[in-house]
Length: 232
Image (cartoon, rainbow, N blue to C red; front, side, top):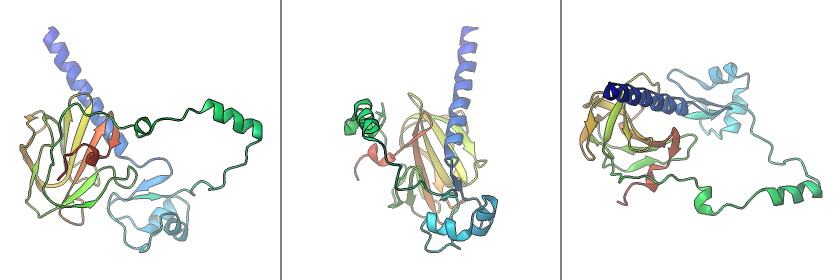
C-alpha cells in the first residue's frame, strides 16, 4: 500500500514539473510569443499598439519576417530615466540593498549530474533567457539526438505550440531537459533513459530549418545550457 502511494505521489510531482515547464515557456508580462500564422499587424492590433511601435521596441530590421516562438515586446519599455530620489531616499536604499557577489547574482543552480551534448552540430542561436530559453543546434534532418543525462521521459508529444515534436526528460533534484523540433521521437513517456542514449531524430517541426532547440530548467527556471555542457 505504501509503495502504491509513493508511486502516485511521484506521478503527481512529475505532472507538476511539466506544468511548471509549460508555464515557464509562455512569454513574460509585456511580451508575446509568436505563433504560426501571426503577422506583426495582427499582433499589434491584438495588443492595441501600432506596427511602427512594435518594430521600434523590438528593433526589427525586417518587420514582415517573424520566427515562430520569437518573443516580442508588446508594451512600451520602461523609461530609461527613472524619477530622481531625494538624498534621504538614496541613503536609505544604499543601506538597505546589499551588494551580492557575482557568483550569487548569477543565480546559477549547481547541477548534481554531468551533462553531455545532445547533438553534434554548431550552435546557431544562443541563450538569452527572453527570446531564447535555450540553445539552437543546427544539423540535417535525421541527425541523432541524444539524452544529455540519465533521467525519465515525462513528456513526448507535440501539444506545445512552437516546439514541434518535443521530449522532456526529468532528472534528479527538479531538473528538466527539453529537446524540440524533432522529426521522430524514439522514447515514450514513462521510460527511463541513459546519458548518450539516442532519443530522437533532428527535424524541423514548428521550425523554419532543421535544428535541435535544447533547454535546461531548474524548478521551471531557464538556465543557460552552455554553463553546464562540456567544452567542445
